[in-house]
Length: 418
Image (cartoon, rainbow, N blue to C red):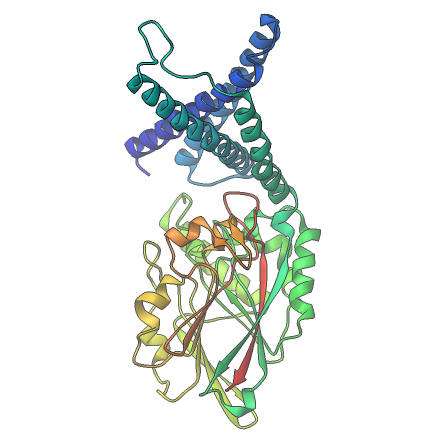
């Protein structure tokens, strides 16, 4: 981000935060309007602006630091946590206040048309205290949700199982299982015991094949070193395979030289080997069972708006149209742009990248995340004309150090013939 762009972005954050704080303050005033003594009201109002003024300044300075350094440090993550928690809580309050403001404006308009508003009278009815009480009560839900997501939710690992049926699946692979992990983002972790719980879940699935679909680190290859031994314990009879994600290239931090960046990239590839993962770089391998085989392909990162380095045709080179193929590709936009309509049929694509934005709602009735406005397939299973895509919600987290409603995931896919 250039200097002008950074200034505009930071100014926007500042003005946005000030607006949210001002609007929320209207609800505070309504809550304390009936207090008889003026001094407590003054103390509450002064305390509010001191607290939120300090938070806003802290947030702005942090965004300025991020724009200069290019990395989101642990301290910066804490500020982002506060920013998101406060912002979502304030927006929830404002939705109620804004709804009331619309009602107040309509009531004033009707009264004016009826001749009930005369010169010198207030044009708007006073805010009703119970609306502000309701707004703050409801806002406790996202506030508590974000606090839980920051403290516990980011380690709330869960196993999601899916069975997928394919007519073309070789009979020997009927019932073949794959454990998928994606987006470890090792540099974000601090609680290695909590991470071990997720690793144990992956190990306990005892799948035939293990795959990792990119973003091992946030910025630098060294970030995975404290957990190398932990993740290296994940083994599968048919091997452990991996690909690169957009964060693995070192593009989101500053380097003293081009050579330093290249050295980091080579080290990152070595880290995959130390983990016991076979890193697939626009290539494929043959997995054999019972005299039959399936083809596993892996490409470098390819994504709309991100690093588009992967070469699918290179990975497909030497394969046959009749082969049953599974593709590892980090960004699900690759499936939409190049994979699902490829004449060389790819039966199943495994991706990650989106994290489900680490925030959303997933219930049998409602399924929503901000990620859906960027990615048509942002989590779970999708299919078109017999071709399947599975998007893992991610093992780790980045930027926002938490998860709310979109929990970290270990995926287990069972392939069935039918």
